[in-house]
Image (cartoon, rainbow, N blue to C red; front, side, top):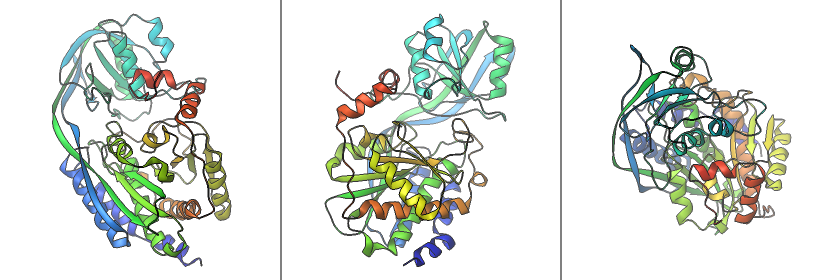
Length: 436
């Protein structure tokens, strides 16, 4: 039967939910807005026909943004604090390290200085360097403060958290500056004394995960996931309101196909992703990982039509995604590399098969994500509906009795990270979970 396809193409459930959550005042981890977004997600999953819908709370490090600024010469330059920056000021000579590659930090004397780096990497470099990796290179080499300069033009300072699982508040003040402010600082103040000043309210807070289920009550499960929290500076439409909307659309479509499911489908919408994958880490620490057949994690979908699947070296996942895409003649891109930066990772790092699903937009980095411009007008309802059809079929395919995706050992995952030159950076930021 194909009626479900037409119903998904005309559905408003996901988009209505997206509008509702982006209109909340603030979905930053630990806020009332994040909790209200989780409650709305529970209500919408229940309306879709999911069972055992519930919230699961967990404690987190709270952080509430205050004022921040960069004082340079007689000027005050606009910036925003990076979440979990300490609430303090630091002064030092400004050092512009460009891309902030590992070798840039090795070559420079940054002791006691304010380090500025770009948010991208050059085309010739063979891997993405995460913001936190650059931050902790600065910390390890004695910098007094950290300035993260956006590579995307448009007067858009980038946000994004610092901190580690053991020490959730960072070591030195950290701010995001727009491409234009960064260019001005580099031109006028490189080598001169500047001050980075951050104010924030720091204390205890609570976040929550949303759980729901469909299909038969089997021990094994396919996980369909996203995250509800967003940075407090924007609507969080693409990161990750669209991912939450995708979970809703998949649930609505599966409600029409529930008798086709041979395996339980567990929906989990995580809290506190943007501050270190705290919600998914909490879930993974308390879950039976062997019972998870596969994870379909939507984080960054809907921004463009082409679906991009990071498949983490599980060949069966590449085959399944391409098979389903061929069935609907939908453009996809599969990437067999490791992708350790979203809610699938607390499971995949231990060998659980998992996708990180996003959109391939042809852009380098997050685009409008993590800026003031992450607003509803940047995503498209047609992309949501088309991608929901593909991902629903993929979930049904993974849930079939004859589908098998072999788990990998943690040693295999660690070796792949080493081979891809990702291990050193993960160790720097405290995200390496394996025994040496």
